[in-house]
Image (cartoon, rainbow, N blue to C red):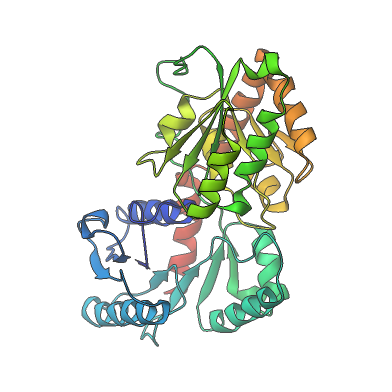
Length: 350
């Protein structure tokens, strides 16, 4: 199993999901992990074959990582390779490519070419695993044969992501706590959640605080958020080692993602923690939630603000939505169910 980066060297939902996949595969299969790193070798799992990629150009990093995977395949002689990258040399065994997201928030002329290039390269994989039907549709439209695609949702560790074991949210100031989790990137829409809170009536705003938590994907965007947050009830938790405690301290979660497609790890982790979730209505997010929570029209800050006001004023509704979301994750997205699908796929390819 190989990934150019993994948490905590790079915090991302896709990285956490792949690391969870490695952990759940180990009790059932002999696993060799190859991981690149940019910041510090200590941030790579101790048992991994670590490949230093920091300071290299994109092409050089791809070449070095691909070469390391090739060399380890020769030594380890695996039955199958599961990879987060297609930048691998020819291998003597089948490989599975894992894709979390393939489209961007704002379509650009080269994005269609990028998808087609990816679909062409992915043809040599034995299978391409995507987390949702929306991503699968984009890849088939770009030319990847449907027979190559497998839709396996991202699993959630429901023992870690659960309601606060103490039963009490950590309210340091007595205010209702709204949380947005995810990488700090424009397409994640943190600025829209911040705008919705800033537009709350003054009396209601004094009763809430918003926490924006995640790894820094775009430092310039983070600076813009800090400016926007000036004099607002907003704090930041940057590059958190664990995201579950942040969710467990909250009363409700907002997922303001404006990406066109891509499985939302943030929304299902919040649901697993028993939080009511307000989310912009995107196909992949709707698929991840099973329609639970409170969807609002994409990019509609006024609708988002009203949904927040309704939930903040109705404790019973918050409790009902949170419990419904937790039940859904337990029944559909627990790692036991996700691993069962992975196991069938891998055994079917060897």
